[in-house]
Length: 202
Image: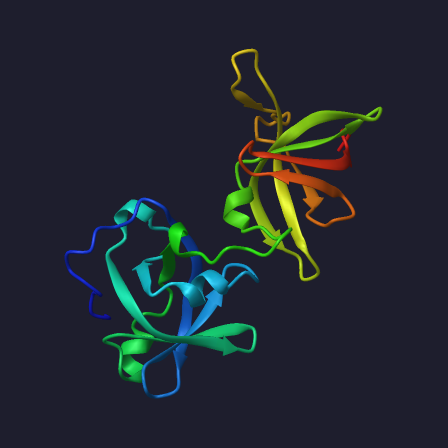
């Protein structure tokens, strides 16, 4: 296991899971990293990574490691962290999830967004030329060509709570919307709102 970057380092409250260690690379302790999205810049910009077993929550991360180097390696990233100097040590980290502080993310370019910032936003579509709430984004994935929003379908109640629509089996209903300029007209992160031309009947 890699040595902690600082045993007294407090776990940040804004950690985001951004990748996973998939293998050792070479014989000198380098790691092969699979980013969770094509937006791997957060991994490269962070100087401290927090490592955890898959499925762990941010508040239960076991330790932090200092990043010595991180560079592209095909569809993956290749990284070296402090305290890992041979292949066996690197292989011991295989499968761990990598978390970084949201505060360490570089500023996105204009009209670009980090996926983590879009989760929780309300998606509006169109019905008869007027905006209508479709649901709330609860996941984003890459289909190889572009990002896709997974939207939990539902409505806002009179008290302002979001009520998810259920299918006949009592499971949450979801819809998929391509996150592309052809359909997404405006993203207002402070308002947690995404406007699109997606039809309400989906």
